Image 1 (cartoon, rainbow, N blue to C red):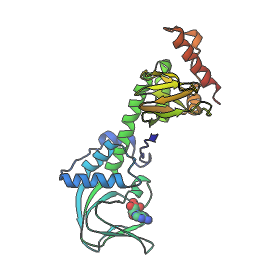
Image 2 (cartoon, protein in one colour):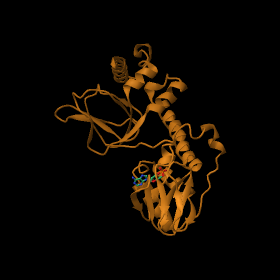
Image 3 (tube, rainbow, N blue to C red):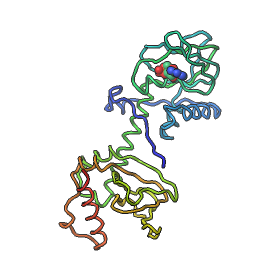
Length: 284
Ligand code: CMP
């Protein structure tokens, strides 16, 4: 299974209420430069988990700059204000006077101080004349946070569409959305094995799952936004899922409402919701 985790900007670095005031400017680039920047971002260990949309927006907002051989691009210990992608030339990375490495065309540098809101971890010097693409801290962090806020609102809408959660308040839904994690499964992946300790429950956002017994017998279930927990035995799935952890779920809502007090379309739906409610109340 693959898990998407966006790196979020440090909340102290930029006040979210200022987000609407920040205008992101895009800069025209050749197809080759766009590809070079995209590859560089996706190749960087600290940035490759960004959402594709974030990568495209960062690429779009990077502006060109150049420096001559011998110039100091980044000074160790300074406050960081810019992330760079090297388009042409070579730079050297040193820490306390000791050479760490050289960096060539198509690589990102200067990302650590911006991502982790720390001072520059090393000095970067131009070994040749260099051409760079650059994005400043405010633009970079705005892209990170806007995506985070959009995601939060999408997750809240999604949770609101789940029948079991319809009695929850907006406040709780948005807290739940905050702890929701997105995971993707491919066709034939196992999600839950019978007998495994249950610490997770799942909400199907796309695709179908199959619930089967030890003999592999079972039926497909593909209700959008239906809830699956470990009370159901073995699941084989065909596409994307969302899950959250019951511990945080229980802390937030303290279990689902009493199922007996409600009207349901069928005994099957009622039994399923009762089983879910029992499961959530049993989680410690
Ligand atoms: P930052 O700390 O913002 O500024 C200095 C940059 O040098 C840092 O981000 C990284 O991009 C880069 N850097 C620091 N240490 C290393 C290393 N050991 N190897 C390669 N690059 C590094």
